[in-house]
Structures are given as C-alpha cells and as structure tokens.
Length: 496
Image (cartoon, rainbow, N blue to C red):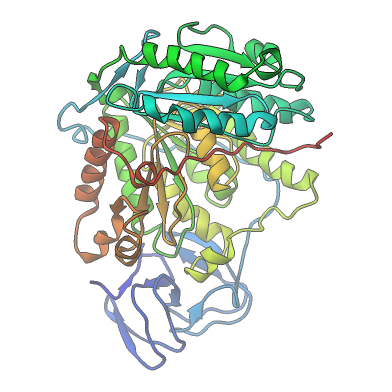
C-alpha cells in the first residue's frame, strides 16, 4: 500500500495514507518531505512553504487559503486553513470540449427486473404503505408487521414509510411533502401501494390525488382511517388485494439503459474523494455509456466545485439552471440567517476534510466526466438520460429519499466513516477505506479502498457496475438484509 498520494501535479499538498510521527521522512516523487507534525490517514501535508493567505491546492483546485504561514512537512487542517469561498456569485458559461469515450461500452449490459403495466422497469416487487400524515404512522407500521405472512417468492417485501408531516404545513412545505409521497407512489420498485390517510389532515387523500394524477386503480389503493370502523381490518383487506395484483409480475431481462442510479456520499473522510467517489464517478460514466441515468444531489456539497459541473452542462440553458440551483440554495441559507459554509461536519474534519471546497471537490468526483444532461428541482421526476443534477440538501436521509422519489432504483452511498441507514430503495454502501469495510461488514457492500492496494480505477468501476446489475437483478444490499428502511422530507417553513 502506498504511504502518500499527490492527486494532481499542481497540488501543493498531499494526502497521507497511514499514520506518521514527527521526524519521519516521506518520498513524494523526487522530493523528500520531513514530517513536522503527527499525521493520521486521510489528512494533508504541505509539500512546500506557504505564506499566510496562500491558496492550498488539492485535486488541482484551491480548497481554501492558509490562515497563517505553513512550513513544508506541516499538517494542513482547520487550524491553519480557511475557506476562500464567497456568497452568491456570478458565473459565466465556459463549456468544456467534451468527447464521448467510445470504448467505455464494451458490451450491452442487462438486468433482470419487473416490467410494470405503464412500461417502467422496477428492480423490486414490493408493496409500500404510504401515510399522507404522521398521525397514522403507527397504523402503517401495524399493517406492515401483520402483512409479513404475505411476503415470499412473489412479493419481496411490504414496507411502511412513516414521516412526521402532512398536516400543519403551509406553502412549499406541504408541496414538498406531496411531491416526495407522489414520487414514491409512482415508483416502479413498488408493485402495489396503499395510501393511508387520517381524514382531517391538510394533506388529505383528496389533495394527494390532485398531485398523484393518473394511476392504476389495481396498483394504488386508498384508505381513510376515520371513514372505517376498523382501519387495521380494512387495511389488511386492501393489502391482500395488492398482494394478489403484485403476484402476477416476474423478473425478465431488461436493458441497463433503463437503470436510474442516485449518487450520494455521507460520513466522508479524507480518502472519500480519492477512492470511493472517483470509483462511483467511473461507474457513472459506464452506466451513461450504456444509455442509463445517474443523479447527483446534495447541492450544498457542490459549493466550491460548482463551476466544474456548470462547464460540463450540455447547453447554456442547463448552465443557467445549474446557476439557479446553486444560488437559490445559498439564498435559502441567507434567508434563514445561517452561514452558507457551515460544513464540513465534525466527523468529516476528524477524517481529514478541512473546508467546504475540500469536501465539495471530493464529493463531485461521483459525477465522473459525463456531460450534465438535466437539472431538476426537489421532488421532480428525472426525465433525461445521462447525468442529472437534483436539488436537495446534504442531509443523508433527506437527499437519499429525494433521489428515490425522483426515480432512482438504487442509491450508491459512499462513506469513509460508515452509516447503517437505508432509503426507500436499495442503498448500496461503498467504503473509502478497507479498514471500514472490514470493521463494518454488516454495513458495507463494496470496498473502494482496494484502490490503494493496487487495483485499478477502471477495474473497480467495472466491478461496481456488475454489483449494481446484480442488485438490480435481486441481490439484497446490507441495509435490506438488516431491515433498515428510512425516509425523510425536506422541511423549510413554519409548523402551524
């Protein structure tokens, strides 16, 4: 295993891949660095003397400026590095000269999924119980528990998705709730849906139907708990009908061009942008070459790397949408009197990430090199093939739920620290380092840390593509095996 990595020739910092003590020497190219501070894996070391106010370069881009003078061999982190980012900015479109990688598609890929009556492809044959309001969450959970007898070869699972919203909300907050619930109701991973209402809530079933639009009455059932004597008995009857409907579907061969995969990171460390995220970026390029679709979200973690994405927009209209995506999110922070750059998290910093630019430049590695073909608002369904940007915050559960509601069949979740959660769709965990993969075998599905042991980026990305194909064909990810399913909705406004 290598001891240190310099990511780009112009970088003036390198990332250490093991622990070092003061006085030890490290070879970086033709140069020898004497370590001046204790260093831990994932953290940065200065490759030259830097005066106060100097740009610190990593990934070939500035990740901040020094807050005091730094000596060659010194540890660079939050104690001597600060963000160099401004607030709401003006941007100009400077499109890259992009050429398609002709050799990325070596052969057509297929998965075995479920063809729905509306023509969409799903990768699970499940029944979902969707509450319109938090007041019926426990009813939904009781129905989920009592329905386990119906789970088998035909119906792969019956799951409730409780949430605290649906009443006492106004404006965009209620609309956000409706958008996310509607996205889940239409999701092809669910063969059948029970929409569970109370009856007196703001987001009642009549209001939800306005958002849902057209639906298959065999596939989507509605229950208003206040209208029936026994909501459990009535709910079980409807679930039995849905089980009968769902049982008609069987797996069949479907082109990988129909796969939609969400890209997300959380609990990142100093290796996330070096191993796991670039491997996912390589995967994204491979899936796009197959004609498939990927979705990058967590907008606040694009701050500082946004121009890279903007200049990869396929046209100027998408560039303008991306500018709005970034600046609208910054304005959201300002409107709530919060600092725009209150990021990274304590865990990120412990793992070696120092500034938001440092985090964002690593985060956006998940997008690979493809052109941006679509830019979508929170809760919107993805309609463009290729790489898309989706508006959502960085919060793991909120962003992963947003990806699912916008149509992602699977969420790829990279992490350097580890997390057990699952989203409404299979959430495949990818570790940035092998130590985490070995320690948390019940959480981690794929070890990208092997990149540091000599495996090539190309081989790991190809392996990840095959893993995604396998999951799409029925292989359970660790979060599914553990029974972890979560959802969360973006709340911005007041509660009545």
